[in-house]
Length: 362
Image (cartoon, rainbow, N blue to C red; front, side, top):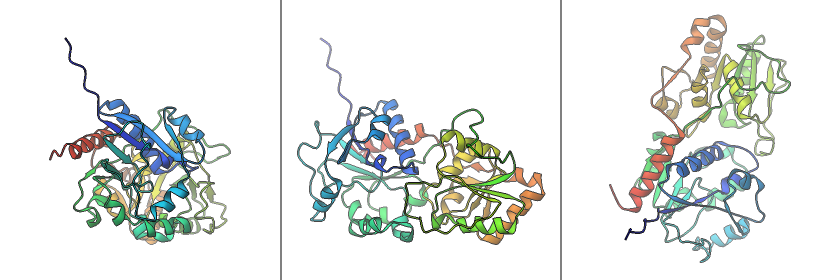
């Protein structure tokens, strides 16, 4: 008589980051990781989210996702009084672990809980948050949330080395990047051609140092500068002033095909952030063979070698000047990653980390 096959461990994944109306690094990360974890076949998955109404966006991405009709506001208000346990019928089948792919959803549960911390923006760059987010992160501090966790996933060593995570099992996964093949698709109404512009992919976020790009546009009036990825639904930076210059072009949200076209045709990507947890556009630029001028922040130094690093607006002006004057210099801007980053690799590392903590294996 054949022995019955053992069922796989059940991993519950909270999909609430998809409730935001715009694409972000977190949602790109979550979609890719869930798909790769499904492919790996190490876990059975319970995909779920809670909200007042069903989300068409989530249903489209993951039709099997389970909807829990529950007001997040009421749920969070209840959590003000000691972070209560989850309702008894929250899960149809008790999972072996819960994964929160961002720090926003949170619970108190006897079920092992894993959380992904993408960056320390709320702690280090609170000025870039909305008023609601400021209140949220003040009440539910990272220190308090970590007290509920069995393990933490981080995208890079720059985050993992933080003393805030010490004492809790953690794993560096590194995010991957999968670009579409081919040449991409020119954005509608965009008239600049190959090698005619410098590119920045970022919202109107003060920590992205877009003012450096604005200054560069003033200093080099014959060069063109394109800023893409301004999320129309994101109202946090609606008061961010942007100049009106003939050589400064603003594109709103762009598709993956349009992003690929821009990366393949730009003189260089300007990745000038004051702080990042990973900075996925840089890796996408590497895969598209787009040159990069980047800020000398810890995560850039950690992940890339032979990079063109700038630490001030003046150094940026010098790099742009050399790129405009010397095509050989542009070739030198082509950076190399220090490792191999794929979504498949990130998902496998995460899955094995979950198992290691669950079964107390070193």
